[in-house]
Length: 155
Image (cartoon, rainbow, N blue to C red; front, side, top):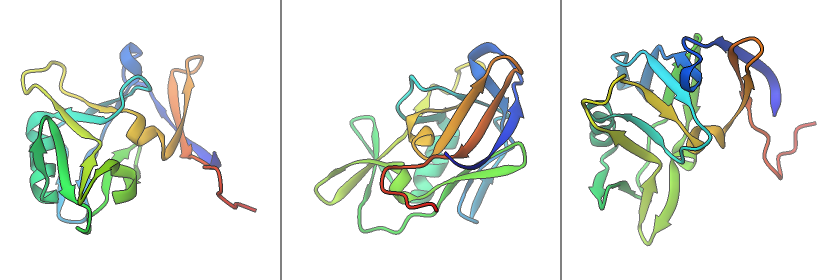
C-alpha cells in the first residue's frame, strides 16, 4: 500500500459493516439513501441496491446485457466515489471496467433485489483492487489505503 491508512469503526461486526455517507457519480449525482457498506473479498463486483445501481447505470449510459452493465469503451466515464468516514474513495473508468468485449466494456457493477434487507452496498474486488483494506478485528475497524501495484514507482 501507499501512504497512511484511514480507519473507520465498524457499525456492526456482522459482515465488516461500516457507515456509508454517500455514493457519487462525478459531480452530477450524489446519493445518501443507503447508510451501510460492507467490504467483502469474496464478492467480485460492486453490488448495491437495485434502485441506486439503475440510477448510476442510467447516468453512465450503460445497458444491461445478460445481467451485466456495459458501456461503449470509447465513452468517457465520470468517477464513482464512496464517501466513508469523511473520505472519498474514487474509482475511475479503468477501475470500474472488469473486461472488454469488442467495443463494449463490462462494468464491475451489479444490483441486489430492491427488497433485500438490510439495504447496503458491497464493496468487492473492484474496490479492493484500488484500495488496500486492513481488517482490524482487534479494534473493530477497517483501514483503507491506496493499493500499490506492480510497476508503481513510488520513491
